[in-house]
Length: 345
Image (tube, rainbow, N blue to C red; front, side, top):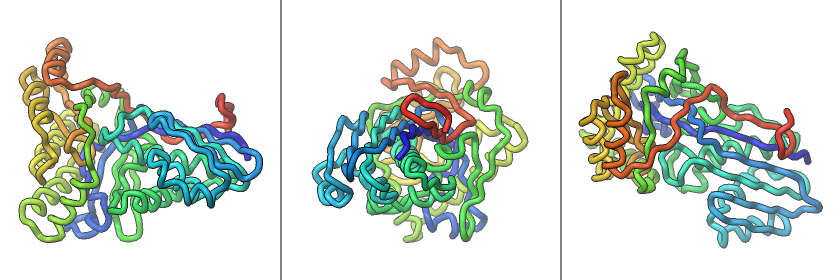
């Protein structure tokens, strides 16, 4: 087995989250579109061979390590190591020949709403497959990662979290019967990044609960949720059109509008901290905010006008108690290199 190091960005969801969860996007009057972009808060994975059949797992961000005799004993012992469950399930899915060591490090804060666990899982699966000399196409990695994550969370998962880590760039993802159509939008990512700030509220989000609540309300026909999700779908299609036309001002207005609809979609998406942050940044001239992922905490995207004064914005963020994170959108997705030091694979 070769030593392979993988690196993958996370994502910011600009519009259309939740409607990427199967089968919601198939029930809308028009095809569901989700728009997101790759964010350079990377997940890193190193896979190397070990003698015999041993399995060694180490998660730097979870502060967890364990060594097992083989894949079978790992499967039996994972329950005692919850911080390593994702890595263990990835090893089970690939089943590399011989022994294997998997070491990971996530940059994104836990529970940030940036799809960090999905990025890490997709990167781990792709790195394992390359190290085992059974490389997978990017779409095959996406399907496998979504299935593995569904088995881990024991609930519905969407497809949007996997595409920016694998493909990079700013993407429009249109869910259709039989699969997802991926469109790379002609966005100058530096210009878009300059109009955004990313902040962490300090409260981890709980997407499994809020996603499930929204899904259940939608399929139960609750009017407020059905109306909100259909409006989110409309705004997301409009955002795709604005970005296709390189109309950044119109696009950012639609991001804020989608965020406003999302905040009233279901209880728990907005929190007192998020409401305070939104009011603080608007008071200094920002367009508004959008919660990341399913909300309920985690990260918030602050959307700026061209003329927002940086010092006033920084003061508003400090007042709201938010922690700024780097917000650099990137064209490159998954990167696999040979060797722990990164010679080209």
